[in-house]
Image (cartoon, rainbow, N blue to C red; front, side):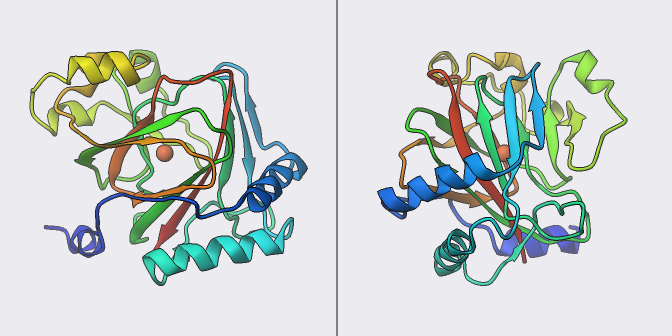
Length: 235
Ligand SMILES: [Fe+2]
C-alpha cells in the first residue's frame, strides 16, 4: 500500500465526543466571533453562509481551542486554507439552512498527512453522521448527480466531485430506518455499501473529533438553521 496512506492509518482512532468542553461564556465568545468575521461565501443555492475563522479576531479563543484540541490529539498542525495574505486560518464556520451531502474532508494537498478534524456546534439542533467507510483521495463530494459530476473547474478549497465510492464499499443497500430518520436529503442508492460509525447529536458545549478519512454528512434534521465550526489538522 501507498506509504502515505499507511502513515495516515497509523494515527487513526475512533471518533470521540467531548462533552462540556466549552462553557456558556466561551460559546458566547464563539458566537460573537462568528458575527464579527466577514462573510466568505453566501451560497444562495445551497443556502449556506461560510466564514473563515481568520487569525487575530480572538486570540483568546484561538488559544483555548488549540490547547484543548492538543490535549486530546497531541501534536498537530492546522490544515485549513490560507487567507489572501497567506496566513493560516483556524477553520470554517458555516451557517446552514439545508443539510450537507456525503463527502470527505481528506485534504487538498497530497503531500500533507491528514490527521483529525473537529466540529464545534454553536446551535443546539442538528446531527452529523460519520460512516465507518474511509477514503484517502483528497477532499471529495460523493454524488451520482450527473450535473455535479460534470463540475471540473473547481475553485480554491472546493471539493472534487466523484461517484467512485459506489464501487469501493460493496453493494449492500443502506439501512432504510437510518436513511428515513437522518439522511432523507441523500438518495439511498448513493449510500450503497456505507455503514454508520457514529451519529453525533449536536450539543452546545461539546466537540466532535474524528479522522479526516471518514466519509460523513450532516443529517437531514435541521430546525431553521444550524451553525458549526469545522477545523482540519495534519501531522
Ligand atoms: Fe465535512
